[in-house]
Length: 210
Length: 210
Image 1 (spheres, chains in turn green, purple):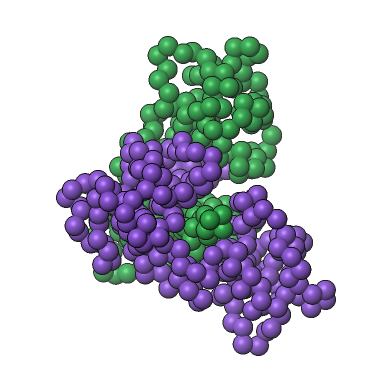
Image 2: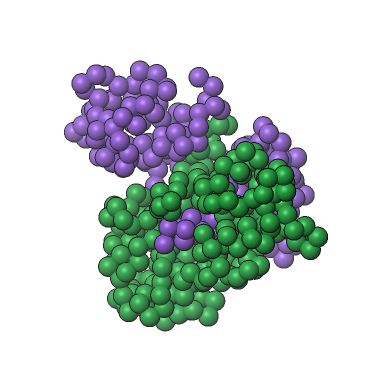
């Protein structure tokens, strides 16, 4: 199976399943049924079985999924068994809040999956300052930093007007996956991966149903 | 059409269409074709036509959509033609950043659609302080505040461990729609509307494809 072809919605549920397994005490349960996992995750048992069937024979009929094995399989698929280096581009309110959140986040049992290893801001007054012990640097040095610190994901937290240029600069520096918080659609090459997190769109979605 | 039954993914695109129309200069163009709108929004023209057809006969064959009319229709559907009052529950890093963002946000041409009108935090040391001129209050007063200020949406930015209790308190206070930033699945009655914004899930989605 080409993993790039797996729909986002399935990947997102895999991450939810992993979280459920990580949060669950595992002292006395070696197996978890699709029904149990579905209740933790808030989906149907059929959905759990269908999602996981995409990645091989992970469960046993009538017994369920071996927790340790399923956890490690999901962690491997989602790169949660390694540390993925992240750069935050734009260190305003939101960039600062996200950096603190990610650098302090005590969630993962297995490992901190994401590590913010670089901060960039165009503002010379911010450059040289630190957030959570990490230096804010000039985007001019991005290519060097990305290579040296193996940055894989760029988090775009610049103002809307600056987002396209920031993403292009990051792309030139070698970053190909972006989490974009700016309320604008980034125009990037098709082999670039962009996820948009857009608070205003989400509020509109909620408002629609009011 | 029961608007509650419209899938989230369509509502999200409606919000994107509205944004594209708002960003577009409208001096010289009275009409926009589905092809033009699709290019701005980054979807197919067929998708645009199909999405909009859910809400009546909005376009004219061979001419396209009357921009002003389509804008006002979308704004009405998405409540972007009114101000929806929002409470931020949990005024840590993220709550503060979001409050500043929403209170300063200069995006909407038509109107600021969302107004943060109340901030709550359990921490007595935060209560009485202000963010962007807005007082942080004791969640004890939530029912009164929600009623007086017509709060419709609660933004949950408390730590994960506190999220369920915060949402339940907000629900008792009369809020039925939530944007949840805590990395946990909230257990709320079925007629409650919850959208989850989960940075870690999104990073995992990106990492999956690396």
